[in-house]
Image (tube, rainbow, N blue to C red; front, side):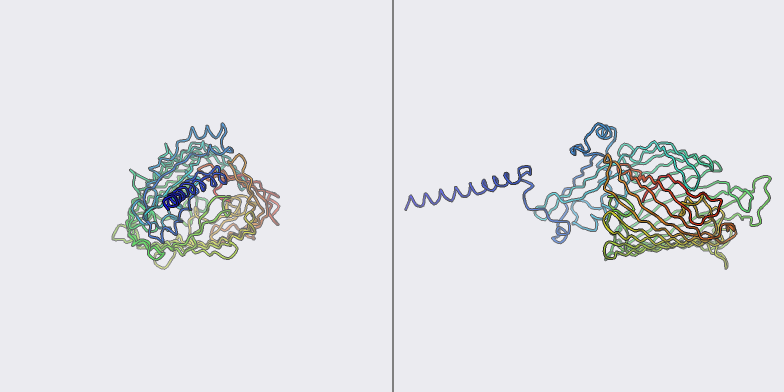
Length: 552
């Protein structure tokens, strides 16, 4: 009996030791390149962690460079040099942008919104947020980001509507990895030369406060603006406040007479919200606007028939916003192989102000700005997004400077590499300044015609495109696409109606799109050849357009 029990104990011990060893040996033979630690059961998803009421533990930031040198396709002299010259985004910049922190419960909504917000930073090419450990109800999270190249000499040339434009300067959108952007750029065009300086910091002193400054020196004037704002930075943000101001001093023309228009603007505001409740955010803001417009007819110029009148408006205002948290993440719509987000939920923004003479206004007047947005996701990945807006001034019985706009975009993919796009935009103005006239031509909707070929206070444009998204990825720097297009439209009405070009215009054409995906500037080089349909004899039989854009 003693020998039998002893043998039994030895067999049990042998099994206890041998079984794990056999499992390890089989794992090694089947998965020789996978560490044993990675062969354990997969971690729960964020949805599962939220359902279990998991708490966020450690948050790790993996701020990667532009190119992954562990990938043989991205490990060469050029890419290594780019990584060496580039200063990576600092982990603190990424950490301050997160909407979640250690000790809070896991929320899928917050994590998805954080990813959207991070991807809105042009200096980030890729964002991945994932759980990396889960023990005793605590989940550790890793945030992986990959940078873009953020230094740009600003060299560029474009041709649209028969007009040439060249640019040069210096841009840095992630100065020393801090997320600060600076830019100086000179533009030389047929209409003249202009200089632009921009500065922005979205994390002033490590906070959510944003500072923006811009200065423009035109050949016929200058403009300057600055703002310091703590925005509603998330759907669950509870308050906002800010101050902003600027001026514009520029030459304008009315009825053939030249005059100098000087505009000064200032605004101070604050607002609050209860945050995100049941998928909806409601925001309420109030403040004061100041506007002063003065006009000076240049020496030797006869006053126009409709001579503008100096005006000052001091307007208390109220603003209401509502946003439904319903976003769609997709790709191959306006970009190639890049995540894109469409707001499909209902969104509205209403702002009403009253210019009171008791506060120094020239006359009593209501000012208003309103917008609506809604999207739909149909079967087979078809998307429809519609939005509309109206802005203007109401004084007495007249609407002044009123502009109504509506836009519809429809995406109908035939496959992951082919898609039909339909865009329709309608605009209507009332008593708008010459500088705000609605124009149509090679720069805004009809590439087969010269720039500003038609003008007026009404405009309709229909764009049809058959887009192709290739999987060609040359040098792992560019994505390539192209397609065919048909456009038709018309601008008419008002005192600036172009009476000699009143017919509906149309053109067809084809184009090439080259996306610079590793650049922070969202550059899309567009090469289009457009052919006008039934155009007058004074219009060339084709137009060649080469310019940079930010989408397809």
